[in-house]
Length: 266
Image (cartoon, rainbow, N blue to C red; front, side, top):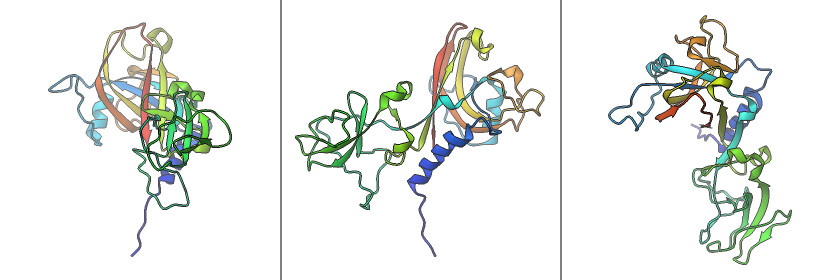
């Protein structure tokens, strides 16, 4: 009998391949963000139901689909959990030679400072950190509290994906920072500039990530930048539904544009 474990690095590699290969212009895969209206949630219309991984759930989504917009490689960024440096917090050393299990949902070996610069802890001070790491020198930043920090990069390079919860990660630091998530940020233009993929008025309360939706002929793969419900097939199978997000209703007007965010976790 053997024992095995799925390494976290494989999740990071899967996220990397998603960005590098899956969204390559030369592939036969077309990725879309889709919007739908599932009707009022019950019993509270502002508290969405938990989606389930069933054929009925997929069929129900497609019966209420309102429109789709294409996701391009510029809309995707590898991200990791944002960890802001906080005075009085103890941090841990990142050391690949030590047999330490990292809690990737609550990492403590890296921080982002108030200037959006990211650092890796190379020496823990034996207590709480009380001096914020600063600067962008190649050498480690030595703080008076005994902590040593290695400057990695400036997260402002992808400021639009730097959120309160997530921060962008260059490929060179993907393994160190455990970037096994993809943030998809898609700008949804107003109806004049998007062909009216969403109703002029009303709400949507579902978003989804879809691969290769079909055109309304039920045969051809849809490849246009935007598509309304009338452009799409709504019979199964109609493209792989990678992710479904139920959310409180979002109201729209025809002149409204917005940024839609979704996180894919591997």
